[in-house]
Length: 472
Image 1 (cartoon, rainbow, N blue to C red):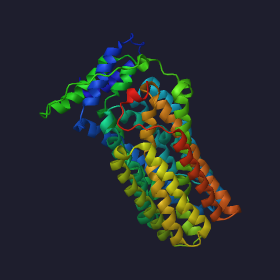
Image 2: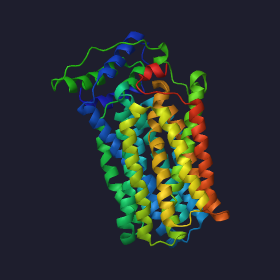
Image 3: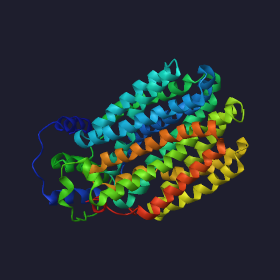
Image 4: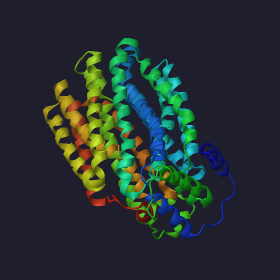
């Protein structure tokens, strides 16, 4: 059966009656076969296709930041209105992450991914024709629903194809596409907005996004998800396809190493399990990390171009160039993290990053953020340090939960990313208007310390461990 035909068959079967119970031995062998697979061409193709969609999701998240300096003048927006427009997208992402994370456990990863990209494209068209702050807020809200759903479901999907020893590097080299998408938004803003206006941001994001829709049909459903639903025959077809992709190039696969699998591996998903047993502590931990990292980073990165233009009176193109510089440094830090995190580990990396980020934040608060260059240098340091946490939390979230909870757990966790991302811009707007910019950086320093303390006291290490062993 072709991949395309298989995808259709898997989708149709999602609505069929539940399959009979599966023996633990069948699950154990399936997992062992997945764990022994090298990074093949098929896995690379899956990563590229999902990466394209994630790239333009990231682009859209930050597009509003680089359109905003022009919109402020055209629509006469106040700082509070700017904060509400920026936050509307994140509130939508919160709803999308929770609802579609739950739905992905029921109907599969691929169906949800297809719907989210269609919603994302439709609302990008809406933003292109927005006529006021209120209309832009509405379109950004609904677009956020699609964006919020795509990334956590895609993260669960990719994690479920790769073995423990290669998981961190393989996944984060996919996830690094997100900060690259942010950086690309800065480049488009710098070169096109001063010439063609703010609508250029949404036109550029629209065309490549449409092209990703047919590529979804080249991807198989997650074999781990299929197995968790008792659909072993379909899962084995996917794994066999991946094995054939390796062996037809003359590469010999090692014998599968079968490990005991908890019988709950095929249990029915129940979101309430996120708050029971070992998963309660993990849930509270990952929620805290999402909020702390993204409240700071998205609070800063979405405001910086407007800050440079409105407070420091820089020319529009210079303000956009400064914003792009911050995004570019964040990409370099993310790549370094992707290459090193399987050696360093998740927990020690996060502890170090949170506490290191407090230093430039406190300096900004003490110095008062009195010049654009001062803010550029120190805020870029903060963003780059915390971006290594922010972009890798999808990896860590997916490792903390079993297959039956992975999409909903990652989705609900990343919902707190959206909460932090919506609170951050609002906090900047209100604190800057009432107290001044130094108080903004002091508040962010406190949030970074909180993140470091939570990680130190509650986080577990996951590097090099099989998903089924981490999360029974």
